[in-house]
Image (cartoon, rainbow, N blue to C red; front, top):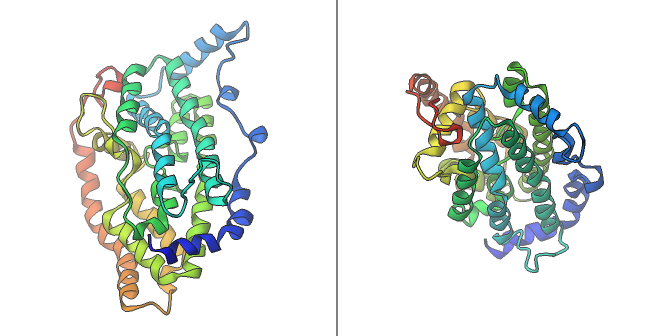
Length: 332
């Protein structure tokens, strides 16, 4: 990223300390995975496990696929943190830098780490998924890395590299997933999904505030970065996932997600419209000719995408079922 763009983030450090770091929760006030799991130190541990297994018996395979994919993407956190830290903006040179950006990245990663731990242990105890296949997928994904963000797009690196937002929790436990789980009787798992979604909402608030501030300080460069992101579409961190069998695993999981209403391309469009409105993109003034072109592109994109995706949604629902190794080869 050009030096002047890095300087914007240096200029924002005091602002970040006052507006972003305050969105983190102290460890002593944070929930931990064990709060939602059977207590292995108690005499009733085995009975608690039996109760957990009974609760999960009615959860359909398609929801199990979404939860397993959530585990995979959450457990790949080392990749996300390394990608964010490697950017010019968040460069944590010593690994213990005290800049607000470095503190945020490490603390955000620590908060996120609990999500994968909790879901992993819960589904392991349920016996409903092939844990070894999920573990293989995690190892493959971390080893595959993550597509490098282009220099201009680094200005939006928080939003694009971390993959979370208010609705942009693709393949991650959202309110939709919690609702679907609750419908099938597992109130505890629904609570878990809702708790994780609450964390994501706090994180989304941080990214929204940061980009909002960037629009205030440098609207021209920010709108062009936003347009660059949308032209390429946001590469979800899990798009390189592989389980040793399915070369199109991410696409197939996305199809299941869309089919059951957990997350679809139309939700993606809703997310984009949400941010266009939130950041008042249509009202930006004083832009260069390139900035104005980027503004027009972003503001008109959702309408163009809806025409295409409206037709694609029907095709997705008509697609044949396929086997998933995460559920012992059963078809979904």
